[in-house]
Amino acid sequence: MVHVTEDQVVQFSLDEVQSTKRRASRTVLGRLFTTEQFSKVELRDALVDAWQIKGRVKVSMASHGLFEIMLPNEEAKSWALKRTPWVIKDKILNVQTWAPSVSRKTFEDLSIAPFRIQLWGVKED
Image (tube, rainbow, N blue to C red; front, side, top):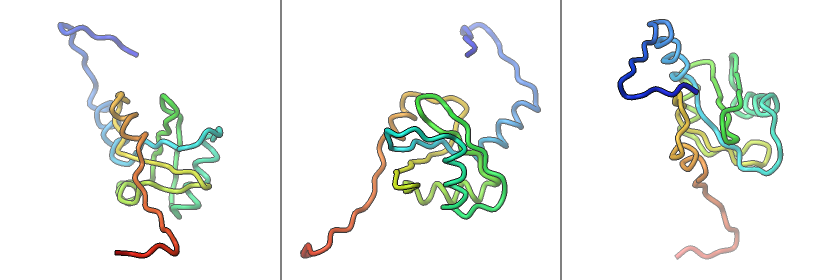
């Protein structure tokens, strides 16, 4: 982690900025609701299978038990975000747009996953 004071100037090359933009355009951050350990390879394989993704998917560990999921393109990212939360191997996976840094709010946002349940035999009013 780089610590910068207010009076310091940090310069990034155009290549670094463009690389980060490309990465953000197709990457989501995910949290898997489970107490079990999930490897990044196991999650990647489950996502490729569940999402029927054509192309390369890369899963990396981020901080605080979060996963960084790089998808093949922007369309796959949009598709995944519109359908969150997901059930992957009987575990809930919540995803949101990736940003270069993870804030406390990001972690809190991923800690809550709204979902629907169906109750059989209950009368509707």
